[in-house]
Length: 254
Ligand code: G3P
Ligand code: MG
Image (cartoon, rainbow, N blue to C red; front, side, top):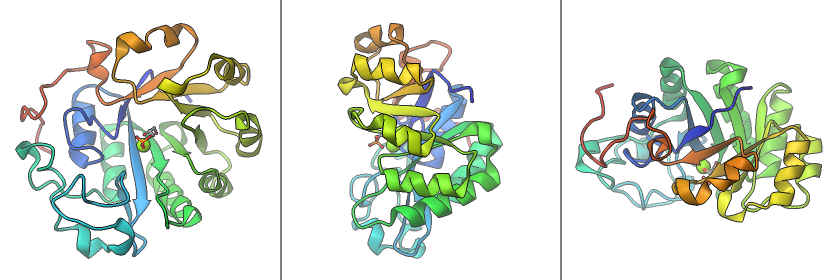
């Protein structure tokens, strides 16, 4: 799998509300090749693209996802909190996001987000099944902080590319890797450790870092062999990616 140097974190989240169809479209419009999206299940089992355990921060509603159904989330406005340009944006169902990612020819890092009280195996089964129906193997990378979710994902599909997701890479990463046979290791760049990075490179795995929005401070890590970064705005790094002014209304109609 050819992993990119820049992955638009939660879509192009510097310029559109995170984890929405608008953020996926904005990433594509800005010439990004890959997006990272968080997926989790509502209480009725519907997989949706969302980061937090509740809708409070990024919508005009309140409440925990685990207590909500598809009918509850449909009326929510998940765009206005970011900018009035995105007023009326709806929470994306996983299926809608997959269709758009596929139509735009993007690669997808789908992060299985296991918030408290959610079932890792149920999420992994439904998310992997649906993603594999839509995306080819070389355009899909499934990651999670939750190793049991990754175990289920691996059991679902022997050939699926997996990413081990950590804050700081722990000493046990190699035993996780032996069990899960990942393609990549993902870590918080502010907690990167050169010794671990050397081990990961020696194992011929890709190293992806999140969430990098300070190119200058990060720059020396490229020399140490980091493969790529999750960033809210690839335009910060490289002029090939279109830079946008926040909320400038420049998104194209879908
Ligand atoms: O997958 C990388 C990154 O998205 C992990 O952290 O909290 O932004 O989902 P978070
Ligand atoms: Mg994420």
